[in-house]
Image (cartoon, rainbow, N blue to C red):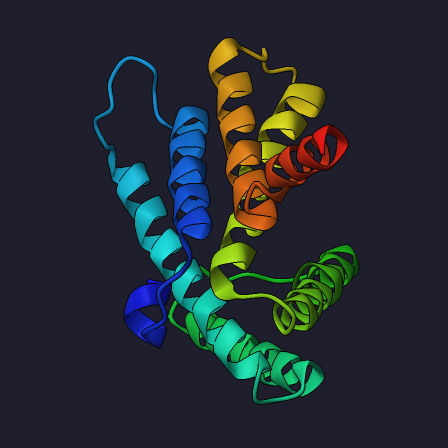
Length: 190
């Protein structure tokens, strides 16, 4: 996506990291019996496409605009779209004080703060690296399901997490720690 939209070719380490991340996420999410996609998987892929476009646009606009102003625009847009969607639902609803506090907390912490942190961070990195780092959500979601829901941690989950972290390590370090060890050995030998 980064390639197509911004016409910038990511380096080979970012491409390797992205491919490994996709493989790792597939280990965490796809059923083990087959690699066939269900309707839920297709919806998830569509959502992932939306998130990819979001990450690319944030990477583009944070270079040109202040992250706080961008966050305000994002929150206002999310509010307008949410209210519009609410008007088209068939079900009526009422909200009590506890529900109102929950919605306000989610709006403040789950949306505003996270958008602000992402906008500020993406000002200093590219969209490919940001997407790879944000993919750790699958890892932490898996770990949370093991800790809080009592899911059994299996080899497939461990392998998926390991592959994702390997992808992040490659994309972020460009394997420079290997080259620095070779340089250190060369200096000691010489």
